[in-house]
Length: 326
Image (cartoon, rainbow, N blue to C red; front, side):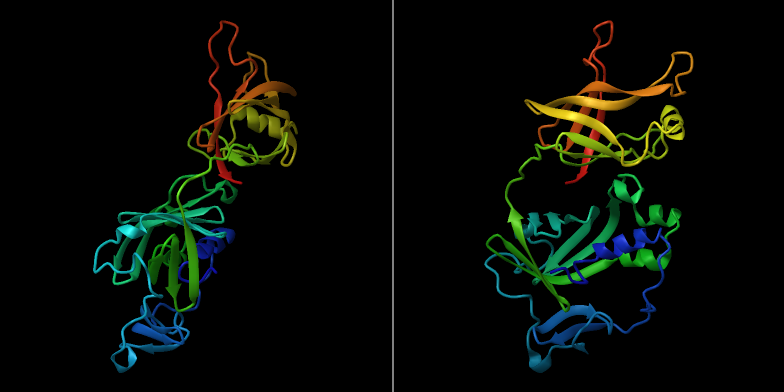
C-alpha cells in the first residue's frame, strides 16, 4: 500500500508530468501543527496538520497513553536516538524499494529516485530529502538534482516544497519484514538479501549523451530493439539523419540479436554513414553487424560495431548504455 507519507515519489512524478509548472496543492502552508494524530490505530506521533491527520489532532496522547510505533518488533524500532543498525539494507515490495545505510537513504519507484539523510528515535523514522533523480523518459538526464538545480529549471517553490521536505513516520522490523506506518496507512517491505543480476537485454537502456546532454534510449525485447527517444541534444550527424528521415521514433534499430554466451550478443544495428570530407552529413543508413557485451551486474552494456577492430587491428571503443528500467 502506498500512502501519502511514504508515497511522496508520486508527487515528484506529478510535478515533472506538468513540465515543472505544477500548481499549489491548496494547503496554503499556514496550517497549525500538532504533535499527535489519534486514530483507530492508536496515538500516532507527528507532527500532523489538518490535511495530514485522518483522526483527531492533539498535542498529547489521551489518558497518558504511549505513542504507537506501528506494532511490535523483534528488532528495530527500539533505538533510543540516532540510528538503528537493524534498518540498514535494501527493502522492497512490488511498488518501491528503500536502501538505508547508517544515516543515508535512497528510495526508488516508477523510475524516480530520491536520496537524503535519516535518523531514528523510539520507533520513529525521520527523513530529509536532498536530491531527486529521474529516468530517461522524463527528459532531464540521469544526474542527481538538488532543490537549486530544479528551481533553475523552472520549478516553483510550492512544488519543490513537496519534494525537498522532511518526512516523519513510524517503523518496526520483524525478521525480514519492515513496516512503515503513518496516519494514512501501512506499507510493508521485505529485506533483499541478494541481488539477482539482469542477464537479459529486455528493458529500456539509455546511451551516452554528448556535450553534457542526455543520451537516447532503446527498448530491447527478444531479438529486436526499437528507438524510444532521441538524444538531447543529438550529435550533428544524428540530427542530420533525423532531418532526412533515417531515424524516426519507434523504428526498429536492432535486429537478429542472439546470445553467444559469456554475457555477449551478436546482431545488427541500423547505422548512418557519411563521407570523410563531410563527417556530419548523413549520406545514408544501413544494417551493420554489432557485438553487445553486458557487465557482470547486468546494469550496463557496451555496443561495438563491426568486428571490434579497425583496419590497423586496433580495438574500437564501444558505446556504453545503462539500464533504466525492465
